Length: 488
Image (cartoon, rainbow, N blue to C red; front, side):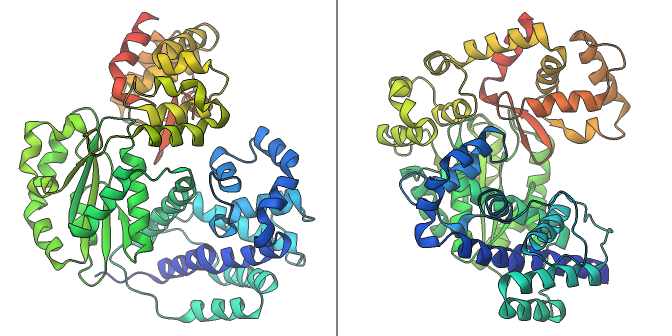
């Protein structure tokens, strides 16, 4: 294993300080202001203010469901620093700092701002490999804030963390930071998850098997169950490693640690990716050996059309335990559909439950509508693509930029990388973007940054963003997108 540099080790310590001790310090303050025993009542008392924060998008939908979960009471242990700080600065008597506080300002509000600043610095990936911050200055700043917010015991933990020997992981620290950020988001969204018989079944199979494959069409719930099961395994003591290729399993394997490797969209999206398949076959025998130690497990989610491809048969280990979410034994029960509808649609659930069997992607439709409540709910659930077609027709008439953003996603096979709009790109990609823009009647020389702004406005309605890649919702019907856009 290659030794890490001093700069990398310092950055790793800063990350551990921010993701662990500092978050607990903020929670200690939060629990003083909002007694955990009466948290629900405190939030209900502030419902008007909270609704205002939701309206102006200070609070997002995932945070809202943490504040008001279905069938249980809110728990501050599930709140991250961002949510706790938002509540403290809007509902309690603390100020929201828009700039980094002066060193002489040791107020509680200033300490909240310090921790939020450094966490944002990490989460926005300013600390990329090879980049550093002033370790001593940052450490003193953060640990002092921890002492004032959380007390002497937490400050002693900071002192210990600064010098103790760190575990030598097989995973680079910057990759670990990214994984933990994603897992924190999963944990937040997991509060919206309805535990179905399929989810329980997959978790049981993973305990019994070294490798489990989840398969179904798009929108059925593969990714949600993948994440739910992965978090369950993490709670059971497994280290979660989110990877994109079987090569990473060999690269990051630790024979002495309980590890679960997690891969979504395994082997392709619409059809099997031949290059990906070839790379899998190269390391397949090695992976078979690695999982024999019983500490290593793998779970993947795979589109049904990809799994059914005859070429997939060569990946024998990924066929040993297969959970088809559309099978009679695992498909959503009527009661489960009702619970999903109530979770996302609340009082409107009864309006559309009669349409719950029209599409396998019913869970996705519920999520989409909850983020676009201005649409006619009956029309949307009876034929969502008629609704989308009408909306795209409006876009085509009033905003060529947004229309072009959708066309780009379709023409780039639903993989539109954000980096293509912010930096230098391949000449062929630049040419394709230019040609599509011209077809969409955009002015010659339209800025790529302008197109990126248009894409951002379509998030949670037409587009979703995953790992800095923009994708269409409901891509199981990509053909319909082609038809809709072609009509324009």
